[in-house]
Amino acid sequence: MSINLKQIELLKKARNFDTQDDIIIFEDLLTDITKKKDITDLNDLLTLFDDGTEFPEVMYSLVHAVESYPAKGYIKTLLNCYYTGKEQWPAWYKDLMIRILNSPIDREILKKLENEYTKILTHIKDDLFFDDPEYQKILGSL
Image 1: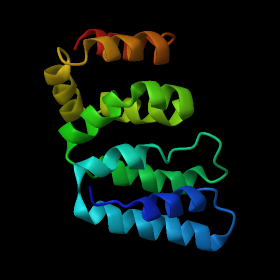
Image 2 (image 1 turned 90 degrees about the vertical axis):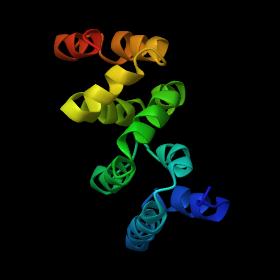
Image 3 (image 1 turned 180 degrees about the vertical axis):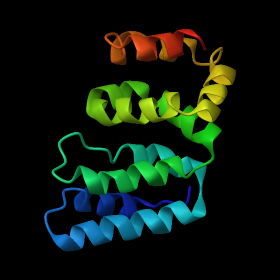
Image 4 (image 1 turned 90 degrees about the horizontal axis):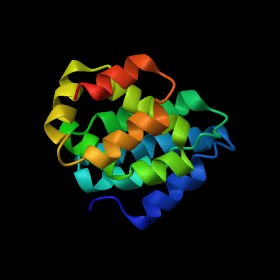
């Protein structure tokens, strides 16, 4: 694991974006961490999403950071943290899943992971996309 406890604590503090410096600290730390592309960092990075942020545009730096990791590892990590994401940052979790479902390459990866993640994918279909026929269809075709 390349990310350390101090970096996570700094990111969690900075994600409140109380000052302009917090935005700079947040983005600089993300850049440093994601340069290493250590897949074990993804779980910690995903916990930084905050549905209540006042600066969603800065949170998109985090979206791009997690999406910069190898796709299969990123998708598996996102699926593995479904229950946490659904409870703690459901809007961002859904946004990340929409981005995956809208990508033909990522959908192919999901198809290959379907047997391993059947239960979670069923929950995603039934819980997050219960009212969206388009994504219901995509998830049903995996």
